[in-house]
Amino acid sequence: MDLARRMDRLGTETAFEVLAKARRLEAEGMDIVHLEIGEPDFDTPANIIEAGAEAISQGYTHYGPSPGLSDVRERIAQEVSATRNISTTGENVVITPGGKPIMFFTMLALVDEGDEVLYPNPGFPIYESMVRFVGGVPVPMRLYESKGFNFDVEEVASQVTPKTKLIIINSPNNPCGSVMSREDVEALADLARENDIVVLSDEIYRRFLYQGEHHSVASLPGMRDRTIILDGFSKTYAMTGWRIGYGVMPLELVEPISRLVTNSVSCTASFTQMAVLEAMNGPQDEAHNMVAEFRRRRDIIVQGLNRVPGIRCAMPKGAFYVFPNVEGTGITSREFADGLLEEGGVACLAGESFGEYGVGYVRFSFANSAENIEKALERIDRFVAAKA
Ligand code: PLP
Image (cartoon, rainbow, N blue to C red):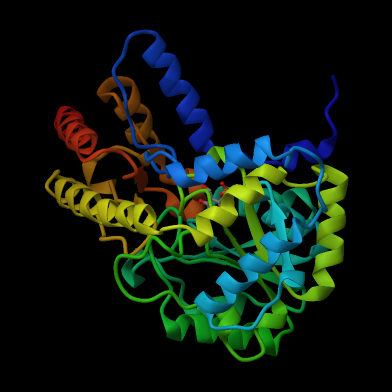
């Protein structure tokens, strides 16, 4: 069958491919430690599951409004207003099946053929994939290890052109675990205002912060009306499979983005929306405990990796990933990731899965038990020693 030409421009998220390969090896009898996929290994808290089940039995099983149930939109707006120190309303919120569709819909709504979009690189692969798919021109904002995996403000300023339509930021960052400083957020806001650029601020890892503070670009003067905040419940409440996230955006974007929802998925499951109402209103201890446990695992994996000859691993400030430099091992990051899975029994992702500036690095997720992380570290050590 002849596929449409646009499909050549659509990339993917390697994590799902590596997961499938790791599962095949497991089916053949190999023991694999999974450090490839970005999802908490915890169960969704019981109160949220009960609220979801209760909502199903109460009949929240029908179509709902495309932008989401109004009570849930309102509650999300309260949460976002309080945590970002801005004033927003339920009218500004569009609920989607996961935070991911907000990326796609934002670009479909804003980016014309030839428009340029600045995006973090290394960064979440879907940004570049989506920009290309909609006919835009992806312009990588390089994140430098020497700057704590942050961009160089002057370099980014030099990349802005009259065609720059959108800048995507992601703090805390996947895959690097870096967190943008207040100064960098301010500099970026200046650029956006001076050049009339919209900002998509992916804040999905906001609650996974181990050091420093989270600064939302939307809270800076004049920025609320040119920023789309992307957030959701997948990571914070271990709800990846429920598929629910949202965008908070200027009113003029709400109708077009809701129309994209109508044209694609119609709406987000109603009982899932009721479950996240409980997630926001109920006790937060499980979400907090999960972050505390991730901090402990972060320390174990960073220390362990830095003991392996040829590996240099920076301490992530947020999210649940480490992005060590493996150049010193003498093999490429691609050979490292493939070999470590096939010979060593540890699944991770080659840095190039996150863009060209990820070459030389690999990403491990530490959303796995401390015991499994220790097991992986022993295997990594053995794998690297065998390559030396
Ligand atoms: N943004 C980033 C940076 C992510 O890593 C992910 C998931 O891996 C998402 C957004 C989307 O998550 P979801 O669609 O499950 O809400």
